[in-house]
Image 1: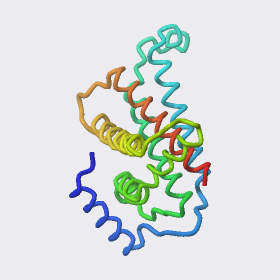
Image 2: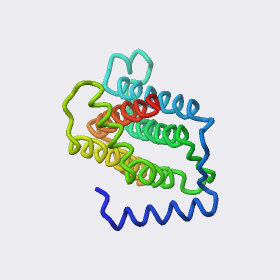
Image 3: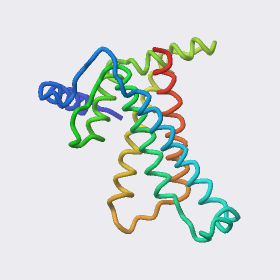
Amino acid sequence: MLDKKTEKEIEKNIRKLFAKRDIIKEKKGKYTEFFLKNAQDSFNSAKLLFNVSINNNLKNSLGFPNFNGYLWVINSSYYSMFYMARALLESNGVKIKTEQSIHAITYDALVYYFYLTKKIEKSLIEEFQRAGIEASEILGKEKAKQLIEGYSNEKYKRERFTYEMGEIAMQNKAKTSLERARLFNQEIRKMINTK
């Protein structure tokens, strides 16, 4: 997923943002709970929209027989991941102080502070060990890679479906978004709770 060139670009971007004080590092963040709540609310919205979109009886009883919320399932799923990433960063004292390209900066900060440093990988390996599952380093690396790829894919998909006219969000894409968000939120929440 991330080639060496991309990793170097992310490192360079984060150093610039740090120098400009668009990203600052403190001992502990104050807004972790705020971001966790937003992540949960966004995920619940995605689940509700998906369930209404696939249930004709529910659509009819609500008075929206032609309701299709798949686009917003994708958006809400992505936002749940975005807010969970912000919660993880915040819980580690990483503050993003800019509104410019907040989504790209959050992704870069997540990669820089947790993927490149192998903190996600280490956390996943420790979690597997605590659960009594024999987990190898390779499995931890693979799961860490999948989390970052899932976040990246949802960021791209949200941009594509939000900004490209004429695209129709399909049910299977919405379902994939929802599942990626569920897995991402589950794993990142564990990392935050074990600190």
